[in-house]
Length: 127
Length: 198
Image (cartoon, rainbow over all chains, first blue to last red; front, side, top):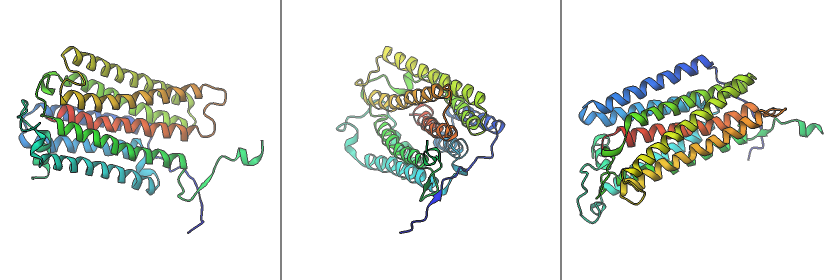
């Protein structure tokens, strides 16, 4: 086992307050686009579009506000493992319950019709 | 005070400060926590046998305003971190105070929303939507509340004679990581609960 130690160092972000405010405004603009997209009838495209816009905001905050882009690689790996596992949990559980005929409360049809899991998976994974 | 006690810079086998590494590992575990809650919400969505249903009571314009508030709090938080790292302490304190105020406003929006829902007859035990909605957004709100208390403690600490000490930049950055994480969780919740049609 290596006994080599490294002095901890700060991986400073080159961004200035002006940059941060610009990023904040861009994120606000994306939120407004999301809002408009949710009101317009885009059919089956609405869910992929909203998830994509949400992903852009997620990555921007993590990379630029949380400075992950400028930090040591081990931190990126650590957070990516958690985020990927969480995504796998969501997809895994949705697939599991989507294929379980008993999930509609013992065969009683729900009054609200659409099932989010089916909707999401049907549009994204085409299954 | 001996030299070893004064020397705060330490060595790790990863080259990353242990406190920073701990916070990132904590946030990775929080991804799993919220991932499970979001899954539960999605599985239960559309399964309610009695109302009120999401389409009947969710107030998207109001929630959009609270989303904007939380987004702006992330901007003020990153400015506070910048101030601490560049020894601009007035900027740091003002930005920290702004973040706290914006966090409290966000919580206020959530209290108003929950109160309105209760008046419409949606309780934790009313239907699957109520239980999964209150659990997910309530636990997110709890995280915001903890974050506000965390930032208040840092603001009080920064007002002392020695401020936040030599590690002010690191302390603020670690608090900022937590705050930004709360923001990105809301980005996902806002899209899944409010924007994606049920």
